[in-house]
Each structure stands twice: as structure tokens, then as C-alpha cells.
Image 1 (cartoon, one colour):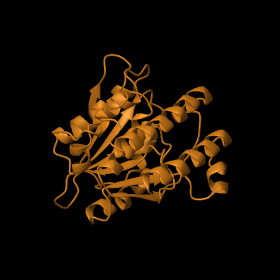
Image 2 (cartoon, rainbow, N blue to C red; image 1 turned 30 degrees about the vertical axis):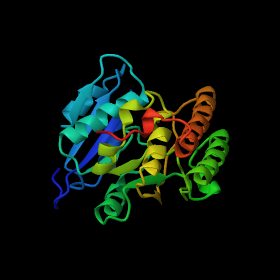
Image 3 (cartoon, helix red, strand yellow; image 1 turned 60 degrees about the vertical axis):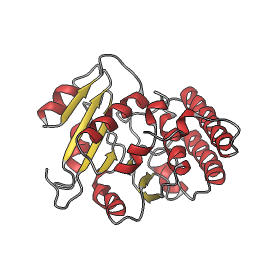
Image 4 (cartoon, helix red, strand yellow; image 1 turned 135 degrees about the vertical axis):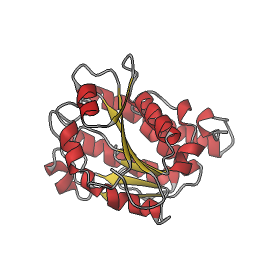
Length: 251
């Protein structure tokens, strides 16, 4: 799957019970656009691991279910270990359109951004027609508005799971200090802003279906409260009122 050019590009896939959607996600990924694909399985109960190995992916496994954030930590550790210059985090649940990987990577290669996010929200009509539950849409809009205000950004979707990072971002951010749960994603972007990395986003069509991973209303509520907590930690750190370990640069 070699890609021309000097920058090594690796896709990482945090996986849990992705057997039904893994092949479709990979089939949409343009041939030759990445050098390696790493799948980290978080103790799936289906045959995700077997399928990934049959497809020739680099496969790492957890011996117990450690959580979405913990899965990403393993993903990024392995990508850095393998010399990645650009890392794409792509869910193997076929929710995000992986055909856009080369375009998102281009913003990193050209030095325009250090972090590129795949935004699910171009218009309200389109997002809801793609199947995003109305409560998730409303909470996403409210949280994203607040995050942009606090962080001084202009991102349309702070809660997407489709992301591209420059190597330096992963080398700087102390992501091992982050949560092992879903709020890992919020912490990571807040840290990226704190360390003055350039963030950008592009519209990405998404699909909501039974096979795609999603959290229920109760966990969404918990995630929303934790997101507000991360913003407060950022404010306290910027005001030098509290030395928070998630803002301590990696050695």
C-alpha cells in the first residue's frame, strides 16, 4: 500500500466489534494513499481480529476491554513507533467516508494545518438526513459553540472521530494523561489548542446505522458534562490557577 513521497502516512483504527463494517471501510480507502494500516482491537467479541489479519493489517489486541481512549493511546504509540509522519484516526465502523483521506492528508502535507477534522455537520438538514439523532445534533451544536468561544477556534464539529495529525502533535501532547473513555477526544483537541497547533476541518459525509459505533443518551450526557469539565480545566490552566498534567508537554 505504498504511497509516493517522503512522509510516511499511517491509518490507525480503534476497533471494537467491527467485523461487519471493516471491509467496507477499507474498500472505500483509495489505493496507495497510505503506507500502513494499524488496527487495535479492544477485546472484541466477534471475529474482528481474524478478519483484520486476513486483510493484511497490522493488528494489536488488548487482553481486556480498556475503553475508547485507551485504544487510541495504543494506536498512537504504535504509529509513532513505526515512524509515522502523518497519522489518520479512522473508525472501522463505516460511519465516516474514508475516500476523503488523501484530501485531508493534503492539508497536513502542505503545512496548512497540524490537525484536520472530518466535520459531520455541513448543514442541519444534511446531518439529520444522514441519521444523526436529534439530541446528539443539539448537544453537538451547543458544545461546539462553547468550545469555539473558550478555545478561540472556528471548528464546525469538535466531536468527530475522523482526524488527521502531524507527527509533532502526537509527540507533544501528553495523551497518556488523558481519559481512557470517550472524553479522550475532547481532551486531545483542547491540548492541541493549548500547545498552539493549527486546527482545521473539512466536510465529511457520514452514515448512522446499527453497525456503526455510537453511545447512548446516558453516556452522551456524561460525555457532555466531562467536555465542560475539560474546558474549565483549560481556563484554569491558562489563568495559571492550576497546573494540570494534561497540559504538561511530553519530554
